[in-house]
Picture 1 (cartoon, rainbow, N blue to C red):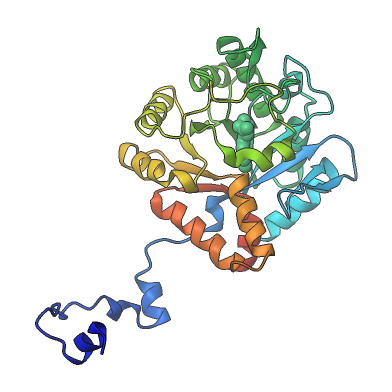
Picture 2 (picture 1 turned 180 degrees about the horizontal axis):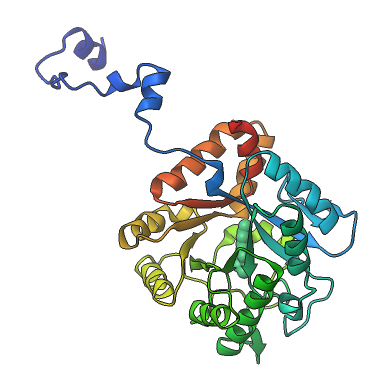
Length: 337
Ligand code: PBG
């Protein structure tokens, strides 16, 4: 007879006080739902879209099943579906026809994100359009700033970012979301928006954005892989947490309305710590690599996709996020309806 069996038949003296039984509140679906602490709501999710020039284009991203590069006409069909399914916001990433060392496509009034924004707002005025403000998709070298002698310059990059932000606001963007990680860009963008009369357009700052391997599939989608080096001279070092809190505090000081932590799942501690230091809304970006891993495992039949996606998103909200940017948003909307 093993010792376990012995203790089962012979309970002995080490018995917990069972006047408290945690299982009482888990005994029925209605009870579990009554005491449930965290909910996923569609108005908290932002769905990313990748826009290309041309028409009739809907090109699948091989590393992100279900996600496409789309021309504006095709994108509008998807936006209709997005709205029908109860989602309330999208974030736009543009892939210009031509890239150059000045990121011209980021700030031109006929840039791809500007054109997409105008068309969405014309047809779906209620849908929130978040404009990702960055230079990497528009730069021939794929970095998020101006490059000189192999270095990424800060201040001249900030000037272009501010210009891009104004141009996106002019096109009708509802929220400006700088994702470049240059120093001082939130203050510069806030000042530029205010000077141009866009005092009511909020800035959602990618405040704690880490130099992450989880961005791999996005770079296929946005064609924004750096042509040399990597982004570790401007994006954050993954081992650092206190530095993330400094970044968040500084962005708040500079006028951010919403702060962001990115990626989400490997950085839940940062979300939770940010929740403690600020009362601003916190966004979290459930990034491309996090999406692709779930999709790959689900395609192999190794996990239950719906269950795992909802569990991941619940975890991000439970950690303290108010808003989640996720490629799963459309699936989630369909499941929850
Ligand atoms: C642009 C940007 C990136 C992402 C969002 N904005 C890529 C990067 O920094 O290389 C990544 C999003 C994702 O992986 O889903 N700077």
